[in-house]
Length: 136
Ligand code: IDP
Ligand code: MG
Image 1 (cartoon, protein in one colour):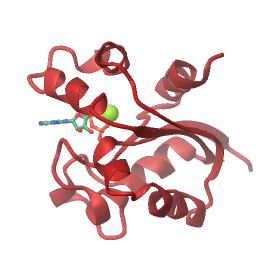
Image 2 (cartoon, helix red, strand yellow; image 1 turned 180 degrees about the horizontal axis):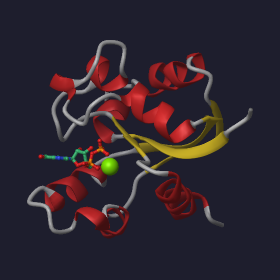
Image 3 (cartoon, protein in one colour; image 1 turned 135 degrees about the horizontal axis):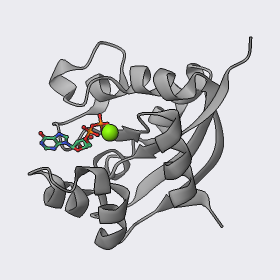
C-alpha cells in the first residue's frame, strides 16, 4: 500500500558552509527520497524566529534563530512513503554524539546546535513548514 508523504528538510548553515549540500542530497536520493522542490536561500532572523516559534520558551531559542539565519541554507520538499519518519531516521538524533551510524547527523553534525539538518517532526508540521518556505 502506498503511503506517500512530503516533509520539509533544511540543510543548515554549518553544512552548506562546508559544501556538504550535494553529499547530503545524495544520501536522501540513495534512500529513495525524491526532491520535489529545493532552493538555496538566506533568511532573516525574524523569519527564523517565526519558523522555530515552538521553541520560543527554550533557553537556546535566540542562539538557534541567530544560527539558522547566519548563512545560506538549502530548503527542500522530500517525498517518499512515510517521508516524515523516514527522514527523521536518516537524520539521526538531535545531538550528533548520540546519532546512529549511517545517519546524516552522525556523519556530518558538529554539535547539538550545528547538527547539519532540520526535518519536520510530524505530518501536520510538515505541511506547515512546507507552506512556510514554498507557498507562493
Ligand atoms: P530536532 O532538530 O532534532 O527536531 P528540536 O528539539 O526540534 O530537534 O530542536 C530544534 C533545534 O534546536 C535542534 O536541531 C538543535 O539545532 C537545537 N537544539 C535543540 N536542543 C538544543 C540544546 O539543548 N542546546 C542547543 N541547541 C539545541
Ligand atoms: Mg524539531
